Length: 288
Ligand code: ADP
Image 1: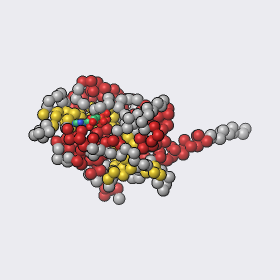
Image 2: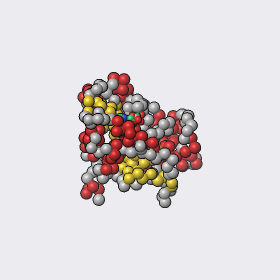
Image 3: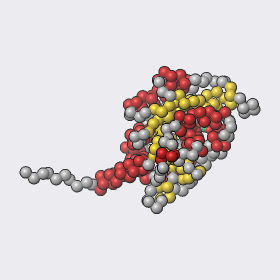
Image 4: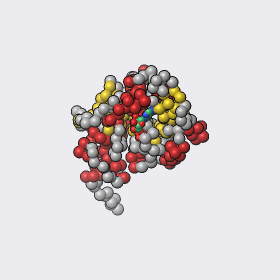
């Protein structure tokens, strides 16, 4: 009996396979991927992602920062990269923008130039496809850390990135101390659990207030919500970042506060937060 021959692959299927191979090759060169997630918008997720990337890069790590927010990318503004031109490198992939010796950045905004000021209306499968293509196209080279700034909530983009992320990926969850934010963070935790995405830890942002005159951190508003949640759920509490007017001014100037104001209470809080994250990386001697 003759074996039935499979129908030949379509052009689209071949293109998808090619992209899968490219994606696997790109991801194999990334040692750790951290997905910065939050239950709701405005809690400082992008600020944390940018400063985490800058702090790790300042600690001699090779870092990539990827902004996959299609609807409202913040990373280009937070790093003064609006209008940056991305080019294709010698290998044909997209070259991320180099912002310091070992920090490279790529944002959806760089590749959506024409749509910049228009609302983007895409359905889930289109977004998934776009993120897949985007991930496979960017030529990061070897990275110790890829930090991904995903849109808030549990929508299409966080779902796609969790599904495509390499095996050594973990989520970092950012919240503010208030009850409403904590309630949404529980949803993010359940989202990660259902996708089998390990959670590395929880960060509480906007916790206490740094007085601009005396520089002392006052506990004006509620604090501790994130820490209580971590205790209750059994996840690592990485630390709290106070409300600091210097964070707003450095963000508006397009500079990470950890490098602009390294001695501020918020930068010192960040130093504590990155300790366990740095420990994820294999010591360089072993890498060579
Ligand atoms: P998200 O990504 O969660 O929507 P952003 O990172 O864009 O939030 O931050 C929203 C605003 O809050 C920005 O103007 C940012 O400068 C400010 N911000 C974030 N964290 C702090 C903080 N700890 N102290 C003061 N302002 C902050």
